[in-house]
Length: 54
Image (cartoon, rainbow, N blue to C red; front, side):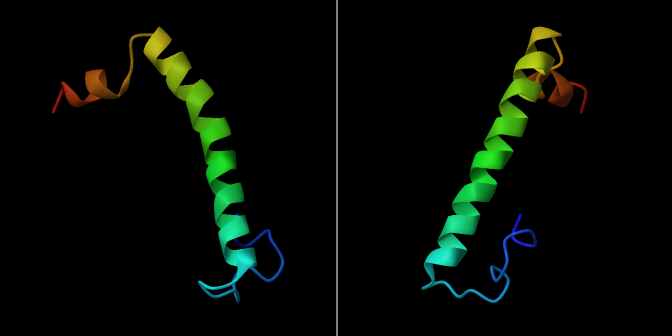
C-alpha cells in the first residue's frame, strides 16, 4: 500500500502522509482478512484448528 500512495516512501514519521498511508493500509488489510477469517471459521478451518496439527 505504501508503494501505491505517491510520496509515502519518502515520508518520515512526523509526516501526516506516512500515518495516513499506514491507516489506509490497515483498513484495506482489515477489509480483506475479516471475511476470509469468517469463511475459514465457518468451514471449521480457523487459526486454532490449523495449529492443532503442529
